Length: 526
Figure 1 (cartoon, rainbow, N blue to C red):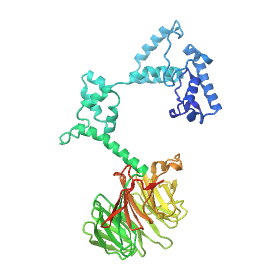
Figure 2: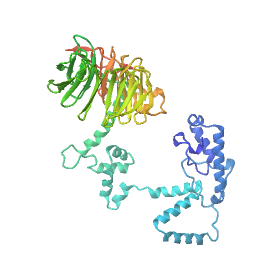
Figure 3: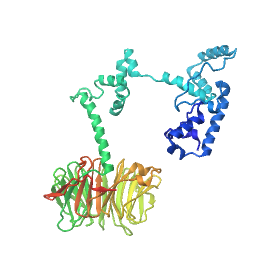
Figure 4: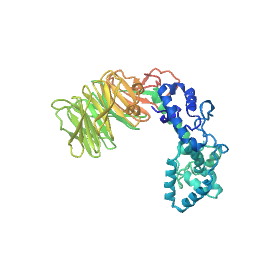
């Protein structure tokens, strides 16, 4: 490790000036002993001292001074010591003449040639000289355009520049200084909607933005701390219990049950509004869009339903065994079932790849256009029960109780997540989180960004473990505000992280018409 290359976060800058050298390094070590000393050895400090001593010797003639030992004057780490013109060497007799000649040549050259000459000149200078040139250039390169342009009658130019900033940048700009704050408040249209639209005054939008940011931060905190309001739908199946699959939107939850039915629930009342009857076996999988619901069952059929009326459009019979999973998108549908040797438990696809997983411990990748085999992802110790695929990332869950993250392009396993005690039955991820459900009845929220960072410690991966189901978790879906999960315990749970109830104890559940609402912000554990 070389001291002068340590990142600024450690407190040791690579821009230590000529004066101070090792003494300033010692001051930084004193200021941050825990952070710095844990990284440094005696050899590191000695190496640093020798490097800077060598530089001092090289610059001695140019600088006109060489200070040793206790006579060294110390300065703050990032502040350049003032150049002492009184102590510099007197210029030689020919200096002024030679300088004028150089300047005349310089003025004759093109701008490109001038830049190239200065670059070559800078390359021949020492670190001390670079520091003084830097302090000379900084004020030349800094311009307060908000203050200067209006003085030249160019107010509209400053306003036009600011109009390119988003709300977050405008809010930060208001904090720069009082003058910027006044000027930004004066420009009326920055927080306004587009011209011609009839909306509230710009002050409303200006004040609304910080509140929105605060709400977003609160939601993230609720996810991390497990604060939520829990709503429970008791499905109360007559013949056999278990909710095998679900999907939801803002108006409804569509669920497939072990009692052979598909039930649709109203999101606002949590009441069952429709029961779709037609399958003669458990409904194991489903997906819907704005027109149809397509479901797969243990009766080996795939059925297509009208999402609005519940009427059956069509029944597809292509499998000889239970239809375990299905996905459709852009006019294409992929279904999977039990094969000759093992079951194909789950499938996902986009326009590039079809990804399937089976009980033989492997994930197979196929070309969507040609259906040609591409590669196999190996790593799980037992059969794979669930996966999701998006962009380059595949996340899979297995009966070996682990979750694996894969790069689909190279087939590499990026991370193994351990935390469940039984088979991982369902898994979903977005840009921030992975949420998994297992036969141990637990739902675990994982930090996706940390999981993709090879430097992140294992202890940072699990954000929260949610325990409310009393049976195996079969399926879940989530968004920024909530998780909706289903279980063998014949319930659907809605975990609302937007409308959490802070500083309150979990209340006893109260049942009304088969619907139970149970605000329980602290019903989770780590």
